Length: 86
Image 1 (tube, rainbow, N blue to C red):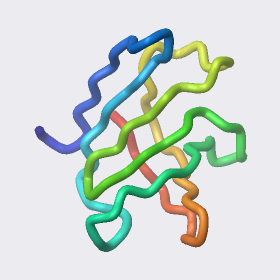
Image 2: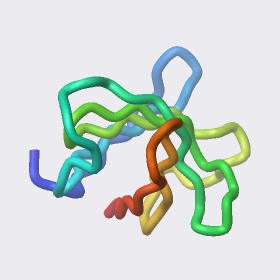
Image 3: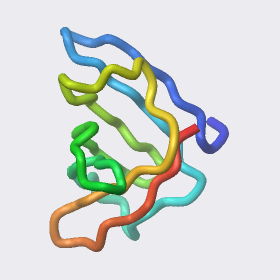
Image 4: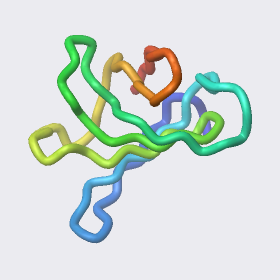
């Protein structure tokens, strides 16, 4: 999958988006769970990341069918990182 490619699916009533990032934001092979927020701090999605694969479950208030732009990925115990979705 090329970096930045995004696939959106509706799964059991939840809107799930899968993205492949250009570079893995965290070291190691573990799956990490966290939050995807705007740069101002508004929650956009719940996130699960493993390597370069980012899986998002969009928050109920998000109107966009597909996320684009730059967001902050916050994982507990780790520093927040910038993530760009195209």
